[in-house]
Amino acid sequence: MAQQDSEAAARRRPGFERASGRSIPLEAIGSRATRIVEDAASILEEELANGIGAARNVERKIFDKRPSSDPDAVIQRFRQDAHELIDLAVDVLGGALGSVGDLANKAVSIRDPATPARRPGRVPTLTMPNPVAAGADADVAMSVENDSDQPTETFTMNASDLISGDGDRIPAKQIAFSPPSLRVDPGGSEKITVSLKVPPKTPSGTYSGLLQATKLEPVRAVLLVTVTAAQ
Amino acid sequence: MTATASTGFAFVEERLDRYKTMTVATILRFLPQTEPRRHLYDLVPEYPLRPGKGLRPGLCIATCRAFGGDLRDILGSAAAIELYHNAFLVHDDVEDASEHRRGFPTLNALRGVPIAVNVGDALNVLSIAPLMDNIHRLGADVTFEVFREIEHMVRESVEGQAIELGWVHDNVMDLTPRDYLRMTLKKTCWYTCIHPCRIGALVATGGKQDLGVFDEFGYLMGAAFQIQDDLLNLVGDVERYGKEHAGDIWEGKRTLMLIHLTGVLSARERARLEAFLATPRLERAAEDVEWVLAEMHERGSIAFGRGCAHDLAVAAGDRFERCYGELPDGDDKRLIGEIVRYMVDREL
Image (tube, rainbow over all chains, first blue to last red; front, top):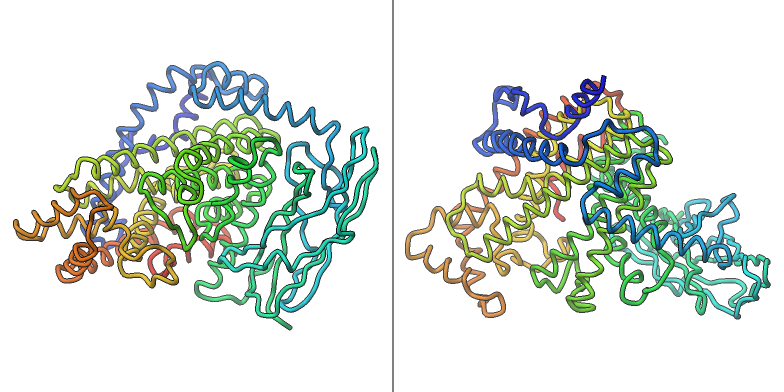
């Protein structure tokens, strides 16, 4: 069983099919194939065949056990046997995430009221509930929650430009917050309305940008808005 | 979600934009809210938030969905791939001493090389968290397989980059198209096309899909993509393309067109080219760059590159049916098919 599982896992490695001897019929590539395509096909064969040998050496050293369905066992194997860089990175991230977890117990954070629960260490996303036409306005509410035993300082919210995948921008000045500044009592929650005025000639697309509180740098969120053509 | 009436590249660009936005939002959700910020975490989103095609996450997500997978299952892996991609871009700009990328200053131009290198390292390291987070949705076995795909992907990329950097460092002049194809396979194709498709299918099918079918498809598509990218650098509309005109010649990058040119010049012209490439970038003259570009046009190197890109894309189209042909029609299957054509017909 273990050997069958091992073979099944091996078949999923890049290049196994080539190492096992199956080749690509050139006629299957197409009658218009020029030398470049033929070269590409042969190079891929060579590289995969070279790679499979190296992969087997690595896997003989590291993956000498059947992959386990036990998550703790998998992660533990990473910590013991994985590449040095991954091992170090896991240690660093584990420490960082642990610190964030501790901070989250007494942290101030933003929450989209539509989201039932937040995850410590994650930047929440605020999404405008509906697409907004160019030239129109839209609002979305968020709550700032203070889980600590101290009141916050009075802070204001800032926004970056909103940028689309095509590089179009909605300037940050088009975003307003109401109230413009506030403070949150210990254990309390305050609502902030984020208002967006989309300039009339804004190209259609999905725009995103960062919202961040002054003096409370962990308090940040991503604002997402879909802009459509002017109606 | 029903398909829109978009036709041509509008459909491709709209879908890729949508998937990229989701991927970047996933990246930002994993961004640590700790110090140091000014010289690290505030800079990490700089490249991912910039305009880009979103090809890699698009292929990954679309493949997953075309195979019946859940969007939520694939976003973590797509985010990891996009983080690696942006890490390569940051480091690539440092290695090439580039000052602009798509109309924006590079990170090394903005903040200096040391900070840029470290931000690039952070983009790499931060890709591990979403991959580990996969375990909650995908289970241990598939999560582990995704890690193996990623390990192969990044190792091939750094090897390919080392090959290309070595050519420039050693001023290698006797390259062939086969050398270019091998370097491009390693540096670009594995992480741009092959592994995004493999991982998408892996996640969607729980490892049941034969992933090897994507190797040729992704390679042919990726090679066509890279050659077209190099062509646009030489002959593309600067305003639309957003990169320095003939920047690759300034850098001495061994593109397929430069390799072709090297093979057709006379001995005297070849010596002039070799001397140009041996000159440090800051000391190169614009008239020599223009000479190289003019010779590329005159000697058919541009036409050669166009023909190769076209033929590779056609071959990729043939392979598309082998990978996706049996799947039900839908927007994601359509997207992947049209990306192949988009690869070579795009203008940016």
